[in-house]
Image (cartoon, rainbow, N blue to C red):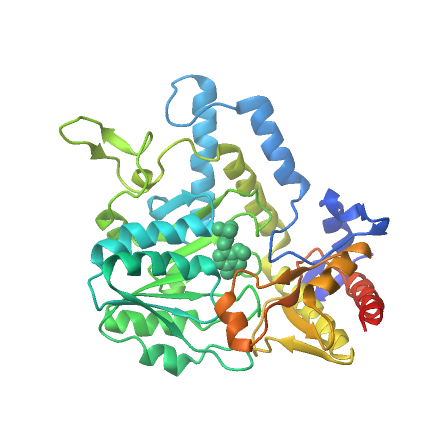
Length: 414
Ligand code: PLP
């Protein structure tokens, strides 16, 4: 039966779930409850079928062959660039570098934008709540250049302390970074305000959009940042896909990071010249089938619509939070006013990993651990958390099944 998500949109959850074959499987003899979406999302049939069709009908390498298949593969790959550029409202398709994910995107900025600019005494500003992909690349280039990495603080609710972030935008900061949405806390950060302050000071801002793009429409021009990194596998797409959007002026000034085929104009032993951006950053054969899948993933989001997705996910988030709060000894880590559907928590007297292992036996997939966010764990003084991360294809019934399973495994451990 149809369920109303908001007065404006009818959200047919059963039809949506039917598009995700994996959701109907069992795990350890129990119906799967997949609440590990912040780790990677499941893939709808149109994505699986688009990749399948690509290999069955169009497979060839891109930009190298004049034959029909080569043209088809190139059109499909470049079509994904167009699609993704429109999806995040990039001013130009040529400002979009296709990457294997956010990690490759942040490393590209680290080595190609930051490293050539950094001098001893300079700094890169990030925050305590970042994923390691938005910390470690900065540390690596800071070590090489004598710069430092500073981390803006958060409060106990898991919100960025905006005034302190702004106060830390001092003249030695050459690059500022922030995640749009925390992968552990679900916190939505005030990226527009941060971008405005960065621009006033002439500091470039990189936004990690990995956990934002699966949940909300993104407009990089409205955000006002300089770099936007995203990963495809958390937004219904295949693993090994992602992108870096960067302002044209930055891309033009950045030297290539990876060298090889596809990224050159002419190779000579007395001096190689490079292709224009974005191709100068895309050495080697890319994940062509993966981007064909990502194209289909974006189509899928657009067919469902972010308005309906947001309404549904926020209902689920509120319901799951309320049900979790009923459990004695359960502490939610991350209670920001604005959140995406990610809930980290701990239960007194239990270890997160034990809970996750036993939940798996009940068919419930959640993640336990540090979530590639050691500094955040250090801030909260915990080694790990249990994290339930929801997507628009999840249901209240799954939340109920999760709570029943959690109460059961909690009893076993206490
Ligand atoms: N940034 C955030 C906020 C993430 O959640 C993740 C993945 O968990 C990443 C970056 C890294 O993404 P990828 O491993 O796809 O490069």
